Picture (spheres, rainbow, N blue to C red):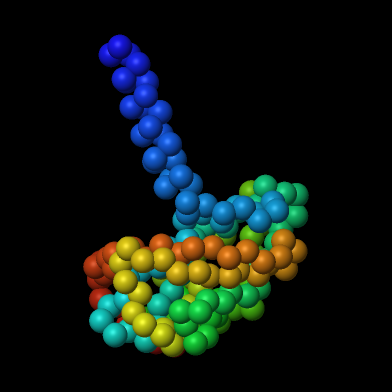
Length: 159
């Protein structure tokens, strides 16, 4: 009886937890999009950013060429560059996903810029983000809004 309860408890826990663990991963053809997330807005910030990892299991590279979301007036693909001692964001025409080398969108690097947020991004919420790839086509992912982390050191940041 005790073994039966243990097995049933384990099975139930697996059924409850497994969908949550996979909820942030998406597949589009040979592309795998993992853990789309955004930081919660700081106060009434007008802009935000989305991050994720994109990998291909195919034999050819692909490119993220466009993103769109109803939470922002405008959505652009961006990177950060160091201009002297100042970090600056710059739009890019696309983000390449090479074979064997995932494109990692992260703070301080490549990201999806959400310009003109219609309302602040609140921790624990989700929002749709439509990604368009040159070869694979279009997929809509749900972006998880996570806690805003404290900056490790002050940084000058300009567009």
